[in-house]
Length: 359
Image (cartoon, rainbow, N blue to C red):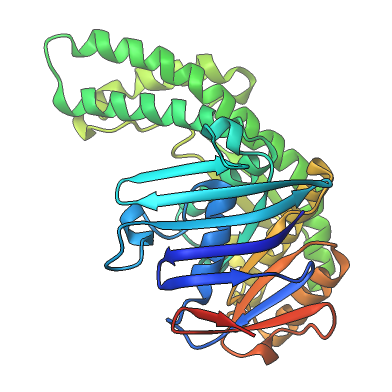
């Protein structure tokens, strides 16, 4: 999987960027605030129709401009497509080979994996970050998962609105939403657990390879529900929590509060792991995700690394690039100094200055 050509117009601070990337390693260097991460965001947008930073479309349009666009010629399994995303305040429109495409038709032809500095806080951060890691990985392997998540989120939002607003028929309405939410939860939890079953041995092996300490890293899905009968268990939990949920105005149980458990030698990693071990855990998770997707998709995803080297110690940094050399993937790597990127071959360097990308 690779990008043959990338164009960004009026995207963030990128006025007019045209790149023909190297099939392996592309290093974008420059001072902070000049637009390196914007290039990665443009690529991520093409793969996911979402930003990993912006909440609103207008944030991605260059200041003072009415609209922005990003497009790329991409290849997956020897099939080439032209992907394009057009943006204007409040609107986002994807196109494939010049034709408008629904989200379900757009996805699946181009996969990206992002590794950003905030990922290094994943083991000790809030559960939302770990759920996001799981959901991104599931979605990359199963594009239909997006619709399943949207169904759950829609029902969850509606149930919360009823819990907050009340009304004459509040109990009957909650009964209806409980049934819908319980059914929607099955797909979310089943997909996440199946992913972890695939990732677990890869994570364990990657952590052992990275640390060489003999310590074992385990991962598991953490939920209050009985996984042998998710729908029934969810209905029972929602019923038991109803008084509490009405008082809070929010739903207390379900996949939206579940977590990814990380266990280092039998102990919770978030409590017992050192800073170096925590970084090694995240590195192992990312390595496992890339290896899983490569096997699942038959082609390695495009990898986006946003100034990760500045957050890793020299040993972990060297281990990361040793791994990248062994995986036949295309990578885009941002850095404040090209010397931080420990790659001597199959590499193309770009300078990013004030939104201009040059050689």
